[in-house]
Length: 104
Ligand code: FES
Image (cartoon, rainbow, N blue to C red; front, side, top):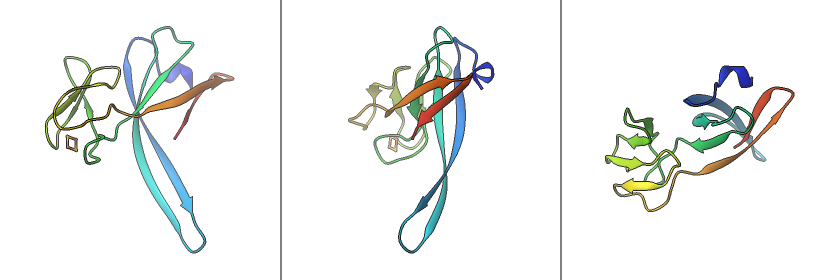
Protein backbone atom coordinates (compact mmCIF):
# COMPACT_ATOMS: atom_id res chain seq x y z
CA UNK A 1 0.00 0.00 0.00
CA UNK A 2 1.16 3.53 -0.79
CA UNK A 3 0.93 4.47 2.90
CA UNK A 4 3.69 1.96 3.66
CA UNK A 5 6.10 3.87 1.41
CA UNK A 6 6.08 7.54 2.49
CA UNK A 7 7.51 10.08 0.09
CA UNK A 8 11.03 11.42 0.47
CA UNK A 9 12.61 8.16 1.65
CA UNK A 10 14.10 5.17 -0.13
CA UNK A 11 12.24 2.00 0.81
CA UNK A 12 13.41 -1.57 0.55
CA UNK A 13 10.82 -4.11 -0.57
CA UNK A 14 11.04 -7.81 -1.30
CA UNK A 15 9.11 -9.88 -3.82
CA UNK A 16 8.55 -13.54 -4.49
CA UNK A 17 8.52 -14.92 -7.99
CA UNK A 18 7.36 -18.30 -9.28
CA UNK A 19 8.65 -19.30 -12.70
CA UNK A 20 7.16 -22.29 -14.48
CA UNK A 21 8.50 -23.92 -17.58
CA UNK A 22 7.43 -27.18 -19.18
CA UNK A 23 8.87 -29.47 -16.48
CA UNK A 24 9.65 -27.57 -13.36
CA UNK A 25 8.67 -24.71 -11.11
CA UNK A 26 11.26 -22.45 -9.56
CA UNK A 27 10.62 -20.06 -6.68
CA UNK A 28 12.88 -17.13 -5.99
CA UNK A 29 12.89 -13.93 -3.98
CA UNK A 30 14.24 -10.53 -4.91
CA UNK A 31 14.83 -7.07 -3.59
CA UNK A 32 13.85 -3.67 -5.00
CA UNK A 33 14.11 -0.07 -3.86
CA UNK A 34 11.13 2.28 -4.10
CA UNK A 35 11.20 6.06 -3.97
CA UNK A 36 8.65 8.83 -4.39
CA UNK A 37 9.20 12.56 -4.29
CA UNK A 38 5.52 13.47 -4.30
CA UNK A 39 3.62 10.39 -3.11
CA UNK A 40 1.75 10.08 -6.41
CA UNK A 41 4.41 8.50 -8.62
CA UNK A 42 7.09 6.02 -7.65
CA UNK A 43 10.46 5.08 -9.04
CA UNK A 44 11.66 1.52 -8.54
CA UNK A 45 15.15 0.12 -8.98
CA UNK A 46 16.21 -3.48 -8.95
CA UNK A 47 18.69 -4.14 -6.15
CA UNK A 48 20.68 -6.51 -8.38
CA UNK A 49 24.09 -5.09 -9.15
CA UNK A 50 24.72 -5.02 -12.89
CA UNK A 51 28.28 -6.26 -12.46
CA UNK A 52 27.89 -9.82 -11.14
CA UNK A 53 24.49 -9.83 -9.47
CA UNK A 54 25.04 -9.14 -5.77
CA UNK A 55 22.35 -7.12 -3.99
CA UNK A 56 23.18 -3.46 -3.47
CA UNK A 57 22.46 -1.72 -0.16
CA UNK A 58 21.32 1.79 0.68
CA UNK A 59 24.39 3.94 1.31
CA UNK A 60 24.30 6.29 4.31
CA UNK A 61 25.30 9.23 2.09
CA UNK A 62 22.57 8.48 -0.46
CA UNK A 63 22.66 6.12 -3.41
CA UNK A 64 23.53 2.45 -3.28
CA UNK A 65 26.66 0.48 -2.57
CA UNK A 66 27.48 -3.01 -3.78
CA UNK A 67 29.49 -4.88 -1.14
CA UNK A 68 30.94 -7.45 -3.54
CA UNK A 69 33.37 -5.26 -5.48
CA UNK A 70 32.76 -1.90 -3.81
CA UNK A 71 30.67 -0.28 -6.55
CA UNK A 72 28.68 2.86 -5.88
CA UNK A 73 25.47 3.89 -7.65
CA UNK A 74 23.82 7.32 -7.44
CA UNK A 75 20.27 7.60 -6.04
CA UNK A 76 18.91 7.39 -9.60
CA UNK A 77 20.82 4.12 -10.15
CA UNK A 78 23.58 5.51 -12.39
CA UNK A 79 27.06 4.09 -11.88
CA UNK A 80 29.35 6.44 -9.97
CA UNK A 81 32.32 4.16 -9.33
CA UNK A 82 33.39 0.54 -9.44
CA UNK A 83 33.31 -2.18 -12.07
CA UNK A 84 29.64 -2.08 -13.25
CA UNK A 85 29.17 -0.60 -16.72
CA UNK A 86 25.38 -0.34 -16.58
CA UNK A 87 23.09 1.49 -14.16
CA UNK A 88 20.72 -0.36 -11.85
CA UNK A 89 17.65 -1.57 -13.74
CA UNK A 90 14.72 0.82 -13.49
CA UNK A 91 11.40 -1.00 -13.09
CA UNK A 92 7.99 0.11 -14.28
CA UNK A 93 5.55 1.14 -11.54
CA UNK A 94 1.89 2.06 -11.30
CA UNK A 95 -0.54 2.99 -8.56
CA UNK A 96 -4.11 1.72 -8.55
CA UNK A 97 -6.55 1.95 -5.65
CA UNK A 98 -3.77 2.93 -3.26
CA UNK A 99 -1.55 0.00 -4.16
CA UNK A 100 1.92 0.42 -5.69
CA UNK A 101 2.67 -2.26 -8.27
CA UNK A 102 6.11 -2.91 -9.73
CA UNK A 103 6.64 -4.88 -12.92
CA UNK A 104 9.52 -7.31 -12.32
FE1 FES B 1 28.46 -5.53 -7.62
FE2 FES B 1 30.67 -6.69 -8.50
S1 FES B 1 28.75 -7.60 -8.10
S2 FES B 1 30.36 -4.63 -7.97
